[in-house]
Length: 418
Image (cartoon, rainbow, N blue to C red; front, side, top):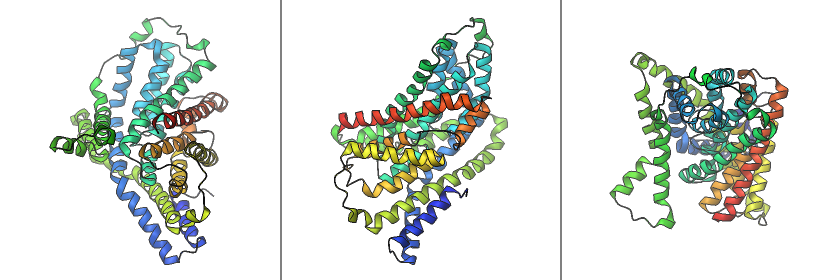
């Protein structure tokens, strides 16, 4: 019926309240409270993160990242370079937008280097996809942290570790399938036609917020027993995700050319417009979770026999089912979290690390698998000028491998850290 995801979630929230014998007026009130609580907690992060991504696109910072990587690693390691670069760029920029932005660069490098287009496409697409489901401030992981009640900084740290492994699994999968085609046939003259300008500073709007959030999280970690003082309080303040991203946004302004300064208000306006759908979906997911949590139905189910690992596998399967059926990874993450959040105490997920690993397991399921009902699948297909059969054979199978890799690493981390 092509109902908007946020509208469907709101309808389900109200119907769930009525089905669970909550008064209609009380259902409406709980829906509003659940919606409001999530929006207030992560709305600023989503908005600032979206604006930052827009600025990086419009100022050409992402292009500078590409040329920097090429100049450092050379053409011989282009597939790996694109995989890593995709992972980094997709932290503040949506994977769809980032792929569209870099599609012309892929085509040019494929032409100059002699690399098969499918290799560069899948290596980039899988790198972009990994950060999209694991690393805040991407909306899916960010909304998940709010719904589950997990620490955003800790999710950033573990999300980066697991996300990098998942990103690399996409690259390795292509090496396995197309081993012969990974040998570069063109000579060094080809690289002379590419721009090899190094701009390490282009990475600062992304790297600085990640460092600030990571340090702030580590300072608060109980095992370190760090005594609070003015310095730690200040670091804790600038390490808040919304403040750290705001600092990254301020840094990105440096890259704006004088002639483009008149477009800043337009960029911000477009970013706010793009943020609206994300906020609505996130808020609607929060409303559904709040209705279920408040109703008391979970306690009445008497679910007490789940252990931690079984819980991780269970949420992976739920998210994978939702993803495969309806296509959107973000919707799969938010819907799964809304359904599971009232259950986390009863399935043995009580510590901060356990909550984060629950989210990474859900994120792993939410990328399994990308096919014809996923908008990102069509972005990858159309902007790389590949046929559907090729994309399904290489990219769709890669997302399956990535999902299973993410689940495996989540379980390994669970065994080692809890």
